[in-house]
Image (cartoon, rainbow, N blue to C red; front, side, top):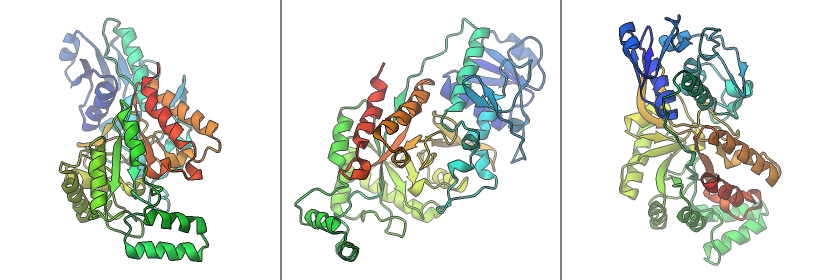
Length: 433
């Protein structure tokens, strides 16, 4: 166990030390403000305060972990060997940066509470983030800093044995609509046919009619392929089904359709299933509650995980609503069109509510790449290259890789050509030496 001496044990300090020490490095951590207790401790120990006591392992503290609310922070980015960091500590500190304060800034999503420009869907974009602007979005910096901290501790305490973690993958299958043409109802199907005719989409019309008359499979019906891949994978896939009402933003399948319910139950026999909350459920607790109860009735089990339609998050309200409904995990922390680490970490963390200054029980599982972001890479070779690079970053810190694909990504549409191969590279990656 690591004992941390500090001048004040604050909620922020406890939160970030537990993430770095326990969740990333696998070691227990406790805190004291008593010098006598600190001196008597005969295992891992360090001081985290403004001035060093003696010759102990010391990291000079920044003020952010002892503050409340938001303040106007002066952030200067510096290079640190193979990465970047901020909140420089000076010469006496065992490591050159206060990684705990820097990690708290990223994990708490401090910058998302500050004034910023949103996109058309009301989302915080990658280009607004410190990580994008300073060129470290592609690295899980919180985990990298944690391992640098570990190396410094090991140098001071060579006899201490740290536990070993291993790289893992949780592939996400997002299902905004299980089918492109099937189960849409008479009015929607007629409307689609009329649109195809007026827009001269003859190939689409031909495919639609063949699907509706049962001659060929629906293009989005890739579930058999995905389940077969699940049967041969050590990683458990996680599906998110949209079961909200039809709106301008969400055009899924009516959850009262027996064949759709049957599909979700069938998928649930092999994979984990969560709720893709509809666009309006994000801000309306009553809609979210209705969708949660609907999913629990279909799957006959308590709902554990959600992700928001369009990956939209309004902090802290979105997460407070999930907590109020006792939802345990959320998978919307990431960027739709940029590959990288929105919260700076590839280790799941608990949501810290900056307004209430409290660690909550909601586990945030950040995702690192969405299929749409890979479309930016023009060639299949480029797609493989950026995918391999992000996986290598996560492997180096024994983290959790969370990619998001959609059911239609595995269709035969030209746009998604080669994506089955990319998916296979991902699910085979934990088995590589």
